[in-house]
Image (cartoon, rainbow, N blue to C red):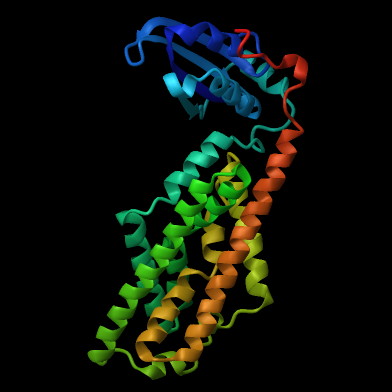
Length: 318
């Protein structure tokens, strides 16, 4: 169950109530006259089944509420309501499977924002990955994978393509490119410093590394793992269950490949730079493609599970 909290200009109140009143999937509806100071008007609250919230949001946008007022969408973690159970039962599908596109799009923008925090996490994760390669530690590789924040930007590419948000596509692409470039550059400088101090030499990279050799040796399994992991990650982001994300972070070889690129650039090991860049490109491409396909399938499935036409309200009739 989701709760809609709306600040509604007085002129739009009846239209907004017309969208929500007596609608299947809406279990409660409240109106507080004159309670909104900005914009001047009313506050409207509604409990809406997750499966039909996309239709409700579309009709509220059609009356222009998002331009003249505000719409807040919040998950209700615990609720007790027979009317709520009836509202969910009246809508096809499962709440867990329902994709709330407004929420998904907002999270895509938030998690792909290029900011100091994102870049810092990228740098720290890449540095840990480089250390993992030097000491040949799979545990440190896993730690670097979990710390890396890049999955949100990769998932945003798929959201942008499915929802036709060109601005989001460029936003996410720039975040990925700048994030990896800065992380590799800083890690390379640190590796050069470590080499000058005698802490690292070429043998640390070119010698036997059974625990981390997979980082610069891409193969068909690299693509398959990236595709499967990205599909699982997108499902975790779009459904009400997010338990699969940790497994996704540990599965994909992006940050470790970036760490190996930085380390090998500093030490002049060209062959591994090429292999690691190939690994990085294959993994990111596979993840972006799988995320797009997963979201596209979800959109098609839910477009066929929309409310029957006789239940849909015309927002312009109020």
